Length: 217
Picture 1 (spheres, one colour):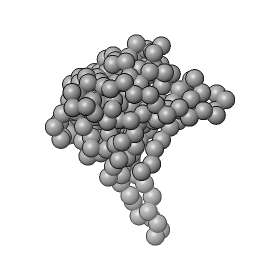
Picture 2 (cartoon, helix red, strand yellow; picture 1 turned 90 degrees about the vertical axis):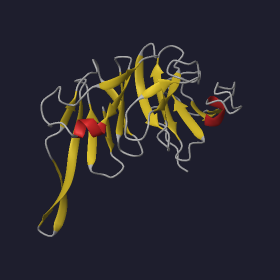
Picture 3 (cartoon, helix red, strand yellow; picture 1 turned 60 degrees about the horizontal axis):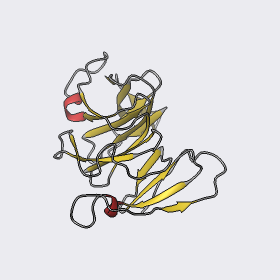
């Protein structure tokens, strides 16, 4: 259901309907003059209790975020995980559990500087939430004025992605709409740290669910 490569291309995270995430070490092997990818025994990251819908590496590759139908997002400290023995379930280390959505969480994405994590879910108001991430190399989130469960953006926004320059947030969902939000306003562009009421740019035209959104600088 979900997969992502690490920024350095040396790891692959996969998640599926079994509720577990697998972190695969990758390498290239030469054979008959050509290189082919190889994967070693994966680290198994248990904890979610339903389908994994999204996995995302932080820009520095030290953290992994996941989202699930179990109503939570999780933040994994990859430095701690990589120091453990791969293989058996339960050896992947503990994750910080992020609550706030009142239903399935469909996507998770980091901001380009790795300081913020946005999640989007299918919880009636389809609220997206952000949390401020901890110091580089240490997995941790704390709620801010626009923390998990805060009422922004509103709308059926099951999916969320942040533009590489960090200026815009795109959401999409089962209302057939894509929306574009000003991140600085959502994060308190007036210096108070509280979200500012801001209307998104609404992109219409789809005749069914918007199942994917992405942004390019």
